[in-house]
Length: 224
Image (cartoon, rainbow, N blue to C red; front, side, top):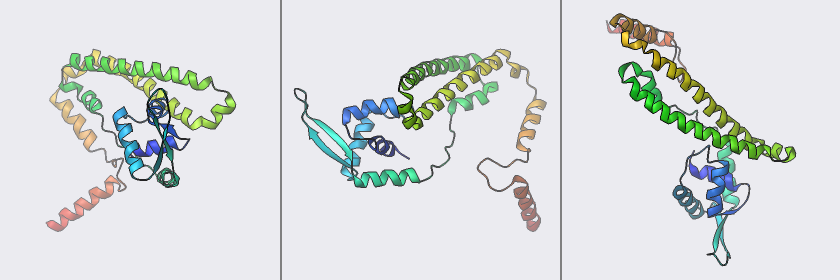
């Protein structure tokens, strides 16, 4: 998936000028997909060059003329093909989670500072999303019901931010307790041995861990 797919979906509801697309994107898909103004304009130009968008120049006196983009038949087909294709399960790569998992190896005050910075970010984000929710809820129910998909994504974003802030409170408590400062080598060994020997398959593995272990034993038996 890429920004061009998001733009195709956005234009699937109707044509718009470049500036209006940039502003409208922030109000509809901006909390789902991060993109700068430059990236949006760049991909609009590429979609037009690839023959997926039509572009007409519309008078906008006394301001400069506006370029209005429309999804053409090829663009509509490309959008439908993408919508019909299953999305790969997203993989989590979160550097801050790695820091939290290794809090026993670092200065807790430094980690607490970064946690507070992120908490402030999520608080501001949540305030913005709450305002967006109020705008959605101001629509007549008959209208909102027809665009419930967009509203559901907003509600999902709200829950993610709320959950993060709740989780941050628990991190605060663990940082304050600092129990790892009295960790012993025996506890480290017990912890690692337990996790590494749990016998559970990895989330992305279709082969049970026990079967893998049996295969390794058989292979090592043949080697001897």
